[in-house]
Amino acid sequence: MKATVLVRPKQGILDPQGEAVESALGHLGFAVRDARVGRVVDLEVEASDPAAARAEVERMCEQLLANPLVESYEISLDG
Amino acid sequence: MASPQPRIGVVTFPGSLDDRDMLWALAALDAEAVPVWHAEEQLPDLDAVVLPGGFSYGDYLRCGAIARLSPVMNAVAAFAADGGLVLGVCNGFQILCEAGLLPGALRANESLTYVCRDVRLTVERTDTPFTARCGPGQTLVMPVKHGEGCYIRPDHLPQEQVVLRYGEPVNGSVDDIAGVVNEHRNVMGLMPHPEHAVDPLLGSADGAFVLASLVDSARSRALAIA
Image 1 (cartoon, one colour):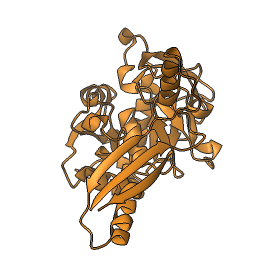
Image 2: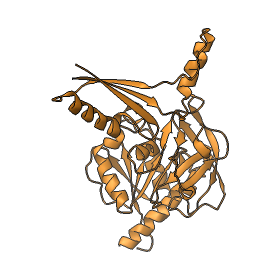
Image 3: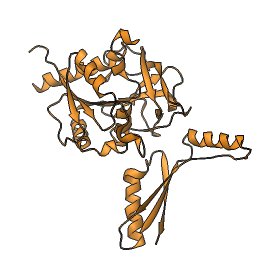
Image 4: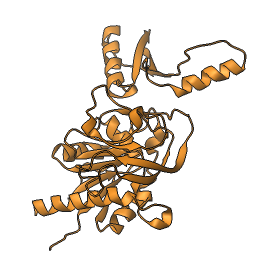
């Protein structure tokens, strides 16, 4: 089963990368605010059903893919 | 033996850079510096362990996130749990945070630029095994060289665990925190590099206040065990 994990800096955590992107977009003439830059992890997970797959990926996020102190994560499953 | 040389291990991870400088600095401060490879599952007989700076595993995912899963880290965690002295410098600090041996996390510098220069630090605590040679409020000058040194503390970090603060803006760290200890004060991490500042020829010898404190503490531990 395919899983996609979206990891982003938690609200309130300084995100200088997001600020740099926001400023660069401003230079291009786009009016944007609150740009935040995160990370995407695509993976294929062995699991009997979607609930088991989600639980497995959640453990991956807690243990490695995200740092819970400064990052939040979202999991989506496909297939 | 009135004054045995304490044995201090320096772990080399794939991508460590400052392991040799650390070995050299510890030997210059009269410790027996012992190289330790990250793939070892056991530590040799040691009185302290140092995780040096560098870019372990290319800083992939997050700085220190992969290195903390190295086989040797189980042994380092057990050593720390047993009261053993562990010091992490720069990437070593990041690894200790990722391993949960120190509170907090290190993120990209506020400026998004790599900082590489001497900085002023203020010693907040002298009652740790890593700063006993310092005076209260003493200013130390040491180099930093990092892209991800912005320290984010957990909400409840007690003041007693803040050991060093920057005396000038460096990387956006919350409360200017440059170095912290764990609750039991036997594990410390800092972003500045004491091992690059143990000889006046290199611009400052203030790093020796930290490393010689560690050598003293490791020696006391060696004597206590012997």
